[in-house]
Image (cartoon, rainbow, N blue to C red; front, side, top):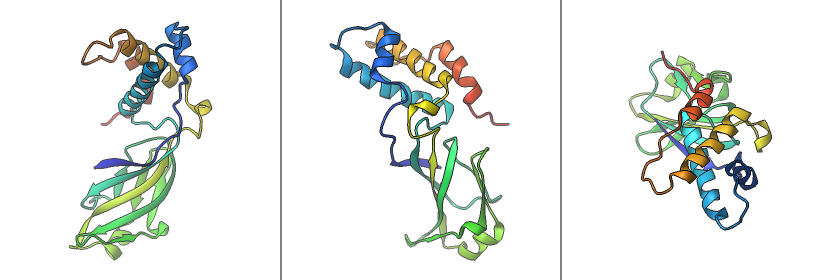
Length: 185
């Protein structure tokens, strides 16, 4: 499975001014660098938590068809599923009728009815593509404070260790992200 961004978020959940206040930086000398760190920290928080913080349109690619019909989407919180497509080996695709699958919003899952796949699938099926929107909202207001604080703390860690090749995720950030991370059993 892979995830592709179709329409990215137009802003970050933490503004430059918020990050500079958290860093206690007053000058504008490093604004470009801090903005870059905000982007990197946001991407890291989203990757670690499996969440899209600001609404974006994503496409999840799956090789093959799910045996159970249950597809866990790779980004949460789920806003909507735009369409599900069955891919053929010849490169063509067929959009599944929405009545042939169920969207479980709280768990960010698409459950395809067996007869929904049977009508389109077969030995010529290469996989599925699901277009969906995930995020807390169109701006930073709906993003939980804990996730914004995690971004700010990660910006501080990157800022203070900018000469390092790898910046470890601070324990405080891990603690803030723990309630938002998906646990697999």
